[in-house]
Image (cartoon, rainbow, N blue to C red; front, side):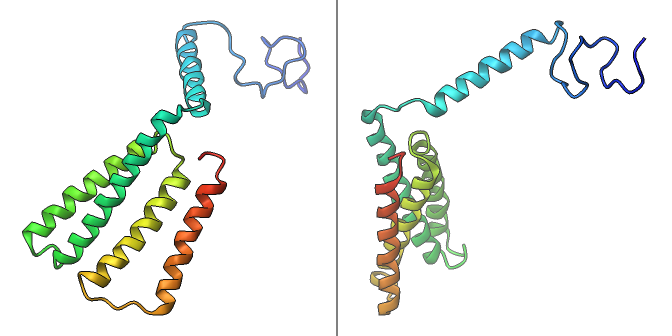
Amino acid sequence: MSDASDSRPPSAPEGAHAHELFDVEPGAHEPLADLAAAAGARIEESIHELRPARRRWAAYLFLGIAIVAGVTGTSALSASAGFTRLGPSVVVVIAYLVCFLAMTRALRLIPISLVYAIWSGVGMALITLIGWRLFGQTLEAGEIVGIVLILAGVVVIHLFSEAS
Protein backbone atom coordinates (compact mmCIF):
# COMPACT_ATOMS: atom_id res chain seq x y z
CA MET A 1 0.00 0.00 0.00
CA SER A 2 1.16 3.52 -0.71
CA ASP A 3 2.27 5.93 2.01
CA ALA A 4 -0.01 9.02 2.50
CA SER A 5 2.95 11.36 1.99
CA ASP A 6 3.60 9.90 -1.48
CA SER A 7 2.50 12.41 -4.18
CA ARG A 8 2.11 9.74 -6.89
CA PRO A 9 -1.31 8.42 -7.79
CA PRO A 10 -1.69 4.67 -7.17
CA SER A 11 -1.41 3.87 -10.89
CA ALA A 12 1.67 6.03 -11.52
CA PRO A 13 4.94 4.20 -12.20
CA GLU A 14 7.79 4.38 -9.75
CA GLY A 15 9.62 7.75 -10.03
CA ALA A 16 6.64 9.64 -11.51
CA HIS A 17 5.18 12.74 -9.84
CA ALA A 18 1.57 13.93 -9.62
CA HIS A 19 2.38 17.18 -11.47
CA GLU A 20 3.08 15.29 -14.69
CA LEU A 21 -0.40 15.99 -16.00
CA PHE A 22 0.43 15.46 -19.61
CA ASP A 23 1.69 11.91 -19.30
CA VAL A 24 -1.53 10.17 -20.25
CA GLU A 25 -2.32 6.57 -20.98
CA PRO A 26 -2.95 5.53 -24.60
CA GLY A 27 -6.56 5.83 -25.62
CA ALA A 28 -9.08 7.55 -27.84
CA HIS A 29 -7.34 10.94 -27.55
CA GLU A 30 -4.31 9.84 -29.58
CA PRO A 31 -5.67 10.75 -33.04
CA LEU A 32 -6.44 14.27 -31.80
CA ALA A 33 -3.07 14.54 -30.13
CA ASP A 34 -1.37 13.42 -33.35
CA LEU A 35 -3.39 15.95 -35.34
CA ALA A 36 -2.51 18.75 -32.92
CA ALA A 37 1.18 17.79 -32.98
CA ALA A 38 1.21 17.75 -36.79
CA ALA A 39 -0.55 21.13 -36.95
CA GLY A 40 1.88 22.58 -34.43
CA ALA A 41 4.83 21.28 -36.42
CA ARG A 42 3.46 22.83 -39.64
CA ILE A 43 2.92 26.17 -37.92
CA GLU A 44 6.44 26.05 -36.47
CA GLU A 45 7.90 25.26 -39.90
CA SER A 46 5.95 28.03 -41.61
CA ILE A 47 7.07 30.58 -39.03
CA HIS A 48 10.74 29.77 -39.49
CA GLU A 49 10.91 28.89 -43.17
CA LEU A 50 13.11 31.01 -45.38
CA ARG A 51 10.94 32.91 -47.76
CA PRO A 52 11.97 33.26 -51.38
CA ALA A 53 13.22 36.69 -52.40
CA ARG A 54 11.07 36.66 -55.52
CA ARG A 55 7.94 36.58 -53.37
CA ARG A 56 9.18 39.32 -51.06
CA TRP A 57 8.80 42.00 -53.73
CA ALA A 58 5.11 41.11 -53.95
CA ALA A 59 4.76 41.65 -50.20
CA TYR A 60 6.28 45.12 -50.55
CA LEU A 61 3.95 45.79 -53.47
CA PHE A 62 1.00 44.94 -51.22
CA LEU A 63 2.48 47.19 -48.54
CA GLY A 64 2.64 50.02 -51.09
CA ILE A 65 -0.99 49.41 -52.02
CA ALA A 66 -1.90 49.48 -48.32
CA ILE A 67 -0.10 52.81 -47.89
CA VAL A 68 -1.78 54.41 -50.92
CA ALA A 69 -5.20 53.08 -49.92
CA GLY A 70 -4.74 54.23 -46.32
CA VAL A 71 -3.68 57.70 -47.42
CA THR A 72 -6.63 57.83 -49.83
CA GLY A 73 -9.04 56.78 -47.07
CA THR A 74 -7.64 59.29 -44.60
CA SER A 75 -7.81 62.10 -47.17
CA ALA A 76 -11.40 61.16 -48.00
CA LEU A 77 -12.16 61.05 -44.27
CA SER A 78 -11.24 64.71 -44.03
CA ALA A 79 -13.37 65.47 -47.10
CA SER A 80 -16.37 63.48 -45.81
CA ALA A 81 -17.15 66.17 -43.20
CA GLY A 82 -17.87 63.65 -40.46
CA PHE A 83 -19.48 61.13 -42.84
CA THR A 84 -22.13 63.68 -43.89
CA ARG A 85 -21.07 63.60 -47.56
CA LEU A 86 -21.86 60.31 -49.32
CA GLY A 87 -19.14 60.24 -52.00
CA PRO A 88 -16.13 60.73 -49.73
CA SER A 89 -17.71 58.44 -47.11
CA VAL A 90 -17.91 55.58 -49.63
CA VAL A 91 -14.30 56.22 -50.63
CA VAL A 92 -13.27 56.02 -46.95
CA VAL A 93 -14.89 52.60 -46.48
CA ILE A 94 -13.55 51.13 -49.72
CA ALA A 95 -10.05 52.58 -49.26
CA TYR A 96 -9.69 51.30 -45.71
CA LEU A 97 -10.99 47.87 -46.75
CA VAL A 98 -8.38 47.72 -49.53
CA CYS A 99 -5.75 49.07 -47.13
CA PHE A 100 -6.22 46.37 -44.52
CA LEU A 101 -6.64 43.56 -47.03
CA ALA A 102 -3.39 44.56 -48.72
CA MET A 103 -1.68 44.90 -45.34
CA THR A 104 -2.68 41.36 -44.39
CA ARG A 105 -1.10 40.13 -47.61
CA ALA A 106 2.11 42.02 -46.82
CA LEU A 107 2.15 40.47 -43.34
CA ARG A 108 2.50 37.01 -44.86
CA LEU A 109 6.17 37.68 -45.63
CA ILE A 110 7.16 40.86 -43.78
CA PRO A 111 7.21 41.00 -39.97
CA ILE A 112 4.53 43.16 -38.38
CA SER A 113 7.11 45.51 -36.85
CA LEU A 114 8.42 46.40 -40.31
CA VAL A 115 4.99 46.56 -41.94
CA TYR A 116 3.58 48.86 -39.31
CA ALA A 117 6.69 51.07 -39.15
CA ILE A 118 6.75 51.57 -42.91
CA TRP A 119 2.95 51.88 -43.26
CA SER A 120 2.54 54.40 -40.47
CA GLY A 121 5.70 56.42 -41.16
CA VAL A 122 5.28 56.78 -44.92
CA GLY A 123 1.51 57.17 -44.58
CA MET A 124 1.89 59.93 -42.00
CA ALA A 125 4.38 61.80 -44.17
CA LEU A 126 2.12 61.52 -47.22
CA ILE A 127 -0.96 62.63 -45.26
CA THR A 128 0.97 65.64 -43.98
CA LEU A 129 1.95 66.59 -47.53
CA ILE A 130 -1.62 66.14 -48.77
CA GLY A 131 -2.96 68.24 -45.89
CA TRP A 132 -0.48 70.95 -46.77
CA ARG A 133 -1.08 70.90 -50.56
CA LEU A 134 -4.79 70.03 -50.87
CA PHE A 135 -6.33 71.25 -47.62
CA GLY A 136 -4.18 74.35 -47.09
CA GLN A 137 -2.78 73.28 -43.72
CA THR A 138 0.40 74.99 -42.60
CA LEU A 139 3.60 73.20 -41.67
CA GLU A 140 5.96 74.62 -39.07
CA ALA A 141 9.69 73.87 -39.09
CA GLY A 142 9.37 71.60 -36.05
CA GLU A 143 6.68 69.52 -37.77
CA ILE A 144 8.86 69.06 -40.84
CA VAL A 145 11.83 68.04 -38.69
CA GLY A 146 9.61 65.57 -36.81
CA ILE A 147 8.42 63.99 -40.05
CA VAL A 148 11.98 63.68 -41.33
CA LEU A 149 13.02 62.03 -38.04
CA ILE A 150 10.11 59.56 -38.24
CA LEU A 151 11.03 58.63 -41.81
CA ALA A 152 14.68 58.27 -40.76
CA GLY A 153 13.51 55.94 -37.98
CA VAL A 154 11.59 53.83 -40.48
CA VAL A 155 14.72 53.54 -42.62
CA VAL A 156 16.84 52.56 -39.60
CA ILE A 157 14.30 49.92 -38.53
CA HIS A 158 14.25 48.51 -42.05
CA LEU A 159 18.02 48.50 -42.47
CA PHE A 160 18.76 46.87 -39.14
CA SER A 161 15.92 44.39 -39.01
CA GLU A 162 17.09 40.81 -39.30
CA ALA A 163 13.84 39.96 -41.10
CA SER A 164 14.36 42.31 -44.01
